[in-house]
Structure formats: structure tokens, C-alpha cells
Image 1 (cartoon, helix red, strand yellow):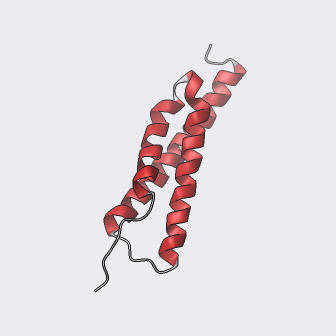
Image 2 (cartoon, one colour):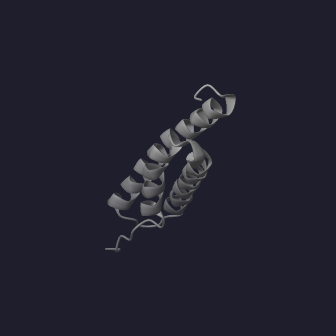
Length: 92
């Protein structure tokens, strides 16, 4: 039986996705929130590529990566929305 390892950057994906949401609603931190969301999405797809290559990774780390991707999608959409709202002056 092969040992199951943690998926690389799965915890980082989860943390970036989770922290991106509150940062998206702060005026000065919309852009860093968007960058964090894009990095979390990239890390998720990197992990999926490693899984497709046949790596044996634990189900907990795969779940962390999936939840991080979902949270990053929400964070990215929120950051773009808030960036547009602040930029157009609708929230002044």
C-alpha cells in the first residue's frame, strides 16, 4: 500500500481563498485580494495536474484544495466587484 501524502500548497490554497474574501471588502486591499484569489486558483489547478499524473495524495488535502478554489472564486469575484464600485465612485 502506498503512503498518501499531502497535496502541495493545498493549505495555502485554502488560506488564500479564505483570507481573500474579507480583504476584498476593504478599499485599499481589493487588488491584493484579487492577486491572492488568482494565486489560489493557480495552486488548485497545479494540484489537480499533480493528481492527474498519478500522485497518491490524501483526501483531506484534496478537499482543502477544492474548498480553497471555491473560496478563491468568491473572493476574486468580490474583489473585482468592489474594485469597480470603488473605482467608479459609487461607494464614496
